[in-house]
Amino acid sequence: MYPTAAVSGLYYAHPAARYFGLGKIGKDQVADIAERKGMPLAELERWLMPNLNYDPA
Image (spheres, rainbow, N blue to C red):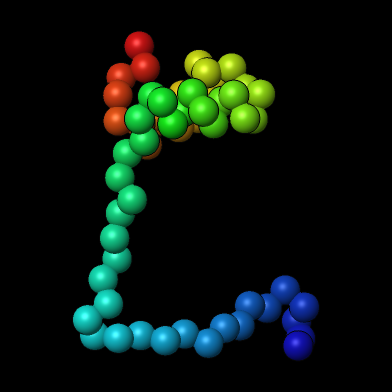
């Protein structure tokens, strides 16, 4: 394929298809992620701020 930076795909669609959200994440989930990644909780909360289900302050 030329150019090499091209993107191609095969897309399927259905009239009844809908997008869905996964929702916000809780403090217990963030603490678990921080522990597994070896990151400070405050730093991870800063990165995930739009997705948090609580106020990290």
